[in-house]
Image (cartoon, rainbow, N blue to C red):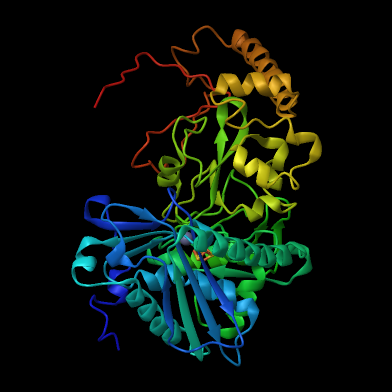
Length: 471
Ligand code: SF4
Ligand SMILES: [Zn+2]
């Protein structure tokens, strides 16, 4: 089937990573532009593959080129609603091609071709041909498929505009529905190949964290292939409407994560936040010093107020982990009225990159927009605190209230301590004397890079000796 392709094509190459030392060229990605788009069309010439712009044999080793991938499909049973879900498979199917690496989705794609593939005579037509065959195998309802690959800057720019309009149309449609309007949510396990404990729960208000799959997309996919990676979750009993906790969602999470994750809040980063695979468009993270939330997206290249960039933060909370204080999310979810509603939504957001703020400005409450700093206003905790104070951000009230509570409880503790018998410390087990409360930490997942912080809130720590050793 793949006889004319000079490299192997098989699911076994899915996890292949092409590092820069082994890379012939990079296509799209953070230093260039690119997009992928699936469109259902009436008129599709089956098997046609066109490369518009320089092919690999005209590219220079080590360079980065713009890259657009248009996949047109036709089929009697194909509905427009299926475009998003079929498009999301591009990531997996492109990665079956040995020597071709594909990351992310939509206009975030980032691809590389290996030197080995180039030496074997691999050209972009071969990529097109391979994925045409794979898509038809995966989706028998595709009767005809044709591929256009763009590598010219101007063509990719035009294609990017067309793709953005299509993404926006899909997203806008989902915005009209809310979680209360439906009886079913959906689960997606497409990312379990690399994040085995991860299941995305997709609801009308919560577009999947990759940003590429919304509730309508899931509905169409589950109808087309009920045993596929996207499946129905009966909404069932609500445990907490604000946090977004549901009995059936918890059951599905437990089943699909082999018992690793048994509770999930859809609308909070605290307690039991949604797990994160690795394809999230952005991460919401807790900033303990100010009791607020920061947001950082994949395109932001600087350091976040936590002192680490997006990539390091993503490393800490991806792979299907549930890490309290962090949640991978889509930018579309930030347009939902339920966006982290249990945590205070935008009232709790105290930092986000300017580019996201601009793109979401119509969805951020007007009275808050000017109060939330971006990297242009403040970066360190100190600068952010100053900005929030000067701009009267609602978090300042929250901090003030918390401080008053701490002061009150400290006064109360001091009073109680004075009443303790003098020998209490020498013999704390004297009958009738309250024992000191012992707190056990819940199980901690340690990040493999970037270090970690341990935050004790409202705690007094007594120690005879503290030893900190350099490793
Ligand atoms: S991020 Fe979630 S919705 Fe998107 S493909 Fe992966 S599992 Fe599915
Ligand atoms: Zn994923």
